[in-house]
Each structure stands twice: as structure tokens, then as C-alpha cells.
Length: 139
Image 1: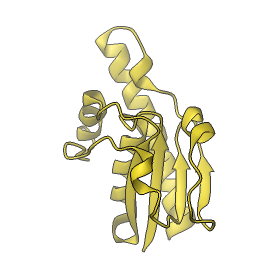
Image 2: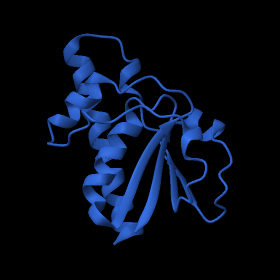
Image 3: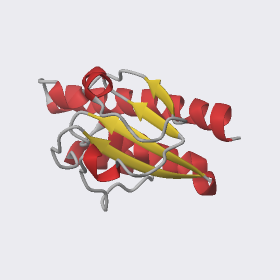
């Protein structure tokens, strides 16, 4: 079983969505963690947009990356540029580091419909990325 850490700035939206999808797609092949270089709490819109695809983030928490420094991760995936640039050094020298900067729907200002559309677009981009990751690294 592989261990995966998903990193973002606040561990509130993109990393939580990726955490949900990776857990879903990897099943028993991996243990998934998510963390941020800061904590902002899990975004209610991230929870709602994932509920639309039957993935429950309700029990997730926003965690600092420092909580996981002793875990020997197989993969560390950063989902925003700020987290990639400010990620601490992990003791595991064998972890494969991957990065993809997904747009942050929580920063969008606009109508409720526009914001929901942005969350759904980011969700689908992350879903595709996670499916591809599982197929490439875990199957």
C-alpha cells in the first residue's frame, strides 16, 4: 500500500477535493493524507461540490503539513504553486514529487452560479488528474 500526501496552501479546497478523489479511485491501494502550509478550514463549497459526485468530505479536517513530516510518503502531490514553492523538506528521500497548479475556485468573485461553475470545473480537472495518477502509479 502506498502513502500519498496532497499539499495546498490552506488545505481547504483543492487538496481536499484531490484527497477525496484519490481515496475513491485508489481504494485499498493507498492511504491518502492532505495538508496545507496554512490551515483555512474545509471549504463548504468544496464539500458541496464533492457531494454532487457522491464523495463525502464532511469528516475531513484542515491540517498543517508539519503534522506529517515523519511519515515516509511514496508520493507528494502539490496542487497549487504556493504550496510547491513553500513545501518543507520531508525526511523521505524516495518520495516522488508531483505538481499541478489547479485554479482556485474559492478566490472567484461573482454570482453564486459562476462560483458553483468554477468549483465544478476545478473538481472535474482534479478528478481527471487523480484518475490518471492512479492509472499511472498505482495500477
